[in-house]
Image (cartoon, rainbow, N blue to C red):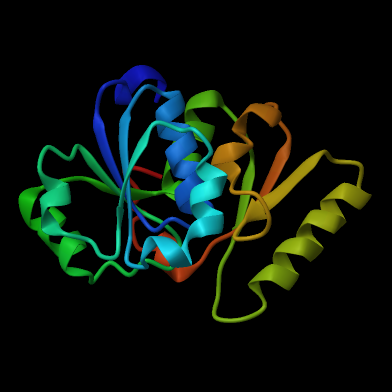
Length: 183
């Protein structure tokens, strides 16, 4: 991805763990970042504090369609459904959609990282992901476990070396944006 995002306008929906990680990632690449959350500021004090002094614009208490004005990429945090009006309008306008998992996969591919074991399903994802990670670790392989577990991988890319194993837990929301051309 490199400087592909420098100076570009990125809108992130959802200011939870993944939204904050996406904000750090894109600010680090020189993008102009707006983070929107449906909750009001008083319910997001901890999340806002995690942003620290990142130069981001906050749009709290809803997702107004005006956020799409000049938007180059709309990113959905985990659990943000793709059927929100702002997401549907972005699709109608041809604005690309992404999320932290898709961006992580793209960046891992660009850096030659992996192999990757991705785990999804309706129940047992966390247990299975943890067990696979422990089995690989017990076999002497250096492994990184994450996704919906712990720190978002987009925050940890610089700690992973080529050839190390990556085990990811992915939700159905995260997988909605994957396709064979981009992942």
